[in-house]
Structures are given as C-alpha cells and as structure tokens.
Image 1 (tube, one colour):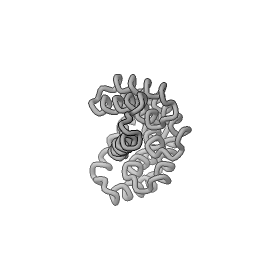
Image 2 (cartoon, rainbow, N blue to C red; image 1 turned 180 degrees about the vertical axis):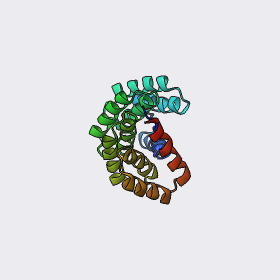
Image 3 (cartoon, rainbow, N blue to C red; image 1 turned 60 degrees about the horizontal axis):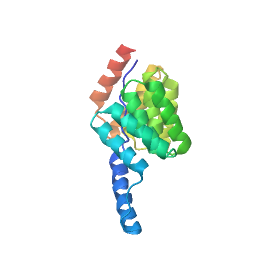
Image 4 (cartoon, helix red, strand yellow; image 1 turned 90 degrees about the horizontal axis):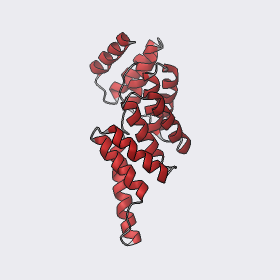
Length: 187
C-alpha cells in the first residue's frame, strides 16, 4: 500500500471561518440562536481530528451525519479520518457520498484521489485529481499527487509537467521528486 497522506481540506481554515461567520449570523438574526446538534457534533469531530483522535472524530462525524445526512463536509472529513487510519475503501465510500451531495466539493475529489493511490488505482486517482484541478486550477497539492499517480502509470512526461506546475505554485521540487522516488521504490 502506498502512503501519500490525506489532506484535511485545504479549505479547513476557510471552512472554520465560515462556521464562525454563520454562527455570528445566526446569533444576530435569531437573537441568540445556537448551532444545531449536527453542527455541534461535526465541530467536535473536527476538533478530535485536529488532535489526532481519529476514532473519536469518526464517532462524532457518524452522529453529525445521522442528524444532517446532507452535509458533504462531514462525509469528507470522516473519509479523511478513515484514510488516515489506513481504511482507504471506507474513505472512498465517504468521498463518493460527498461528491453525490456536492459535485463541486474539491476536497472530496482530491482526497478520493489520494485514497485511490493508496490502493494502487492510479488511473482512478488521476481522474479525481483532474476533477479537483478543474474545480481549483491553483491546487499545488493536486498537481503534486497527479504527478505521483502519473509516475506509477509510466507517464513520466506528464508527471514532470505536473511537478513543474506544482513547483510554480509553491511546492519544493527536491522534496516532491524525493517523495516520488521513495514511493516508486515502495511500489
């Protein structure tokens, strides 16, 4: 199994900012309202995940999903937790559900691609990285991981183009190339 690392949404800060903004808006509009129980459980999951308490995070996401089954973010973050525990297939199931709920969920496509790499399904990974890049063409991490998947498929020219683009967007070339070499030797 290849390990590339899951990415808690690169929009996590943005998402947390939105949670705070929505909380303030709810309080202002409702005159003192509070978060729903589903939102509370989701936020608890995020906190546990940030602390590395993945099983506890999954339990909170399970509850959040029971309460708010249309929350794509809860599926994405639970999928990331499953992936971080080495349960790539379960992660993919959650990313699939997140994509059904929100086809524009860049993090779901990106992280599903990472899960596919860990299962050795490089073409599926590339398909997801392509979609993530269609949604966010400035995602250095998506270019970097597409380079890894492309290398596994022997698409060295395309992989080097992705490495170059990832570097343009801020990735360290030496680090990325060393990672690709290390992963190729583990394959």
